[in-house]
Length: 332
Image 1 (cartoon, rainbow, N blue to C red):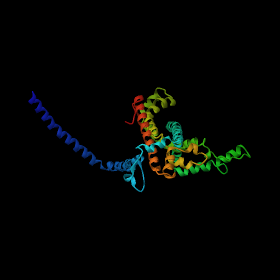
Image 2 (image 1 turned 90 degrees about the vertical axis):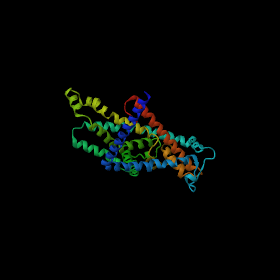
Image 3 (image 1 turned 120 degrees about the vertical axis):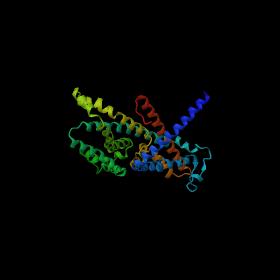
């Protein structure tokens, strides 16, 4: 019996090798046949490697007493322990920036996530194609406005003297004088930041949901119409289930960016009067590393950035697990 087992094992190994070789040959043939697609894929891969993986080498700055003259490799490790520079996370200013980041991010997620879905569903049921295309074009054009121009528009619009906001207030209350602009109000900053972003990006985000709605089988819609389903019922029972997997994936990705509020817009909207609400983690880290004076400012800024990235990673993994348990849709 033992000799027969050895013979069968030998024959199995002999037959497995050619099959593997055939699979490899087929793979190489497929790659060679579609080499243009792999060349296109190579560009984003190179981009991710250069701008996402190569910068990870600099993470060690958070654990070193970084000196620009010595470089990353030449700088010594922190004297009082590897986590010495993470003590900046207990700073009162960082705690305020952390709270402001959470407020703005959650506010953005709550306000900005459902609006593109509602807009896509509304556009999908429109019968007038010309009006539909016009609304779609007008809604996604603000996405191409740069951040600097966007903040300039807000500044001019809410100017109390020459801006449209000030003119409307003067018309409603003749003779009244307004010295404080909403751009200088700490209470108004989250609202201005969030809703200007919603207006700027809702049309662009709608394109993804419209693509998902376009993949719906028309036979389902026709069958529902034959059964007497109203337009609202077709939206509830056909359209929404069709875009739900896409919405869950985008929600997971947005949850992973909760701690990554846009630096440029918040920094440009900042001033001395709204700093209590506009100072977020990214702006605080920038000021700590490049504006404040100190020996270990670069290391402390790197520690803040590393902490921010770890929190985002935890959020992505957590939301993905919840989504996988609640539904069948997840990133991995």
